[in-house]
Amino acid sequence: RGTYHAADPNSRLFDAYEGLLAEKPDSVNVSSENARHAPLVQMAAEAGVNILCEKPLATNAADAQRIVCGGRACGAGGEIHGACGGLV
View (cartoon, rainbow, N blue to C red):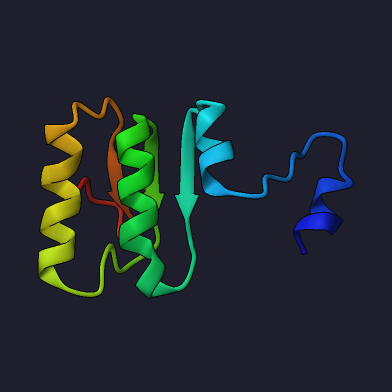
């Protein structure tokens, strides 16, 4: 699927999330499998980008707390929003 969308001249295909985040996008939308939400949101928060995450933010409360506290602790300038519209 990525190769198909990368054929659009207004799109770019990245081999890894780190490459995308290195480009300093204004925001990212995390809509992967539920189990991958926490690590991807954490990576984006550490990169300081705004995040829209499809629910659930994480698969357990400990991971969700770690994301929220980790984003604040690393000085992430971005915001984390859940699909239900609230600021996390």
